[in-house]
Structures are given as C-alpha cells and as structure tokens.
Amino acid sequence: MTDRTGRKICFQASEAGDAQKAMRDLIARYGQTTPEEADVIVALGGDGFMLSTLFATQGLGKPVYGMNRGTVGFLMNEFSADGLSARLDAAEDAVLNPLCMRAVCVGGETVSALAINEVSLYRGGAQAAKLKISIDGRVRMSELVCDGALVATPAGSTAYNYSAHGPILPIGAEVLALTPVAAFRPRRWRGAILPKTALVRFDVLEPEKRPVSAVADSRDAKNVVSVEIWSDDSIRHRILFDPGHGLEERLIREQFE
Picture 1 (cartoon, rainbow, N blue to C red):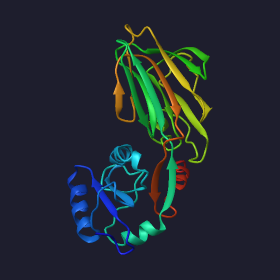
Picture 2: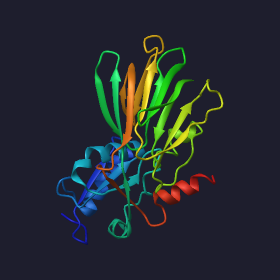
Picture 3: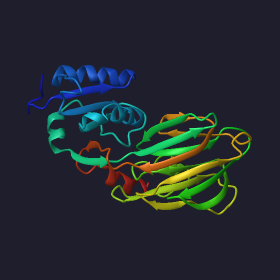
C-alpha cells in the first residue's frame, strides 16, 4: 500500500506507548512497506530513536523523516497524523556524515562504531583522566587532565558538546568541535575547532590507574588506551525536515534561547 502520491512508506517506532500508537494509526491511514522497498522511512520517537534508525538503515540510502513522540526532538519534526503526504512532498533534505571511532582497549580489543552527534571520552574512576591529544599525527597537547573530552559534529554541537560549554557549529560548516569536559589542567583551555578532515587521536595516560571509557553516540568501549576519531564522507545519512524547521534554522535558534 502507498500514499496518495504513490510513495511507499516504512513506519518505524520506538517502544514508547505514544510512538507505538502513532505507528498503528499512521499505518492504517498510509499503509506500510519494508525498509528495503520504501521510498522514505518515517521514524516515530525521540532523538535517540532517530539515531538508531539512521544507523540501522544507512546501507539502504533511504531518507528518514522523523516525528517527535519522545522527550527530545532536535532531529525530529512536530507530530501530526494529518497531511503527511504533503509534508513529505515539501520536506527539505539534510545530509549528515557520521564520525568513525576506533578505540583500543587495555586487553587489546578494538571497538569500532559510528556517531552522528559526538564521540566522547570520560573518566571511569575516582581520579581525573589524563589524555594526550594528537591531530593528524602531530601531538598538540601532551597532557590534558580532565573528566573527559569529546569530538562533535555540527549536528551534535548542541547536544553534549553544548552542555560542556563547547561551540555551536553551523550545519554546513566543514569543521568539528574538540571540547574538554571539566578541564583541570590546563585550566583555561576551552577546546579547539578543527577541520572536518582532521584525524583526532586520544592516548590515555596511566590507563590502569586512571581508567577511561569512550562512547560513540550509544556504543561504548570501556578501559580504552587510545581512541581515533575521524569524519567519514562516504557515509551519508539523509534526514528530512519541514520547510523552515531544518537543522540550520534550529542551530541558529538554539543560540538565542
């Protein structure tokens, strides 16, 4: 079954009750198809569900249109069961490239993951973490004593990065934000803005005494000794937004609220 335009839609929803009810109602009105056969995927939930939907369907190259049925909806459109076909016709397309994380753990295990928002490191014990930071193979900071650090994309710059007093980046900017979390030494260091092409490497100093974990959106690696982070332009996530409510507008609006 398709909508009035002949468009095939795949509805997916988080486990929340509101999201599941919305999915049942929308399927009854607009039909349902598989992700592989769909022209567009409609995700019902919050930002966390949107991220998991993008990763689960990234090999399909299908655009994802989110409607907020969760608690946070920065990546989502306002929910309405009416006029969905017209909204999809008018939707604006934003393309996001994720970050790649390759973390090496104390035991030699390697954890690889993707992140649309950020890759973050945080201390795993009572003592502050000690990190060495290298950019494109050159050591830029021999020792950062902190609770953690993160690398954020423009799309993720209003999330954890912003809470850690990092900069909000315009969605079209070809840059990444490197932001410390509760830096103790150097105390005044506020982070850096890096080219999108940069390869960022964190080496954990004294990993047995000062354990550190790394998280790529929701995938984590514990007791890491090194973490490399880079942007992968070969992976393209397409997100659809209602006109005038795209990521660029939301990022600007966030700075005046």
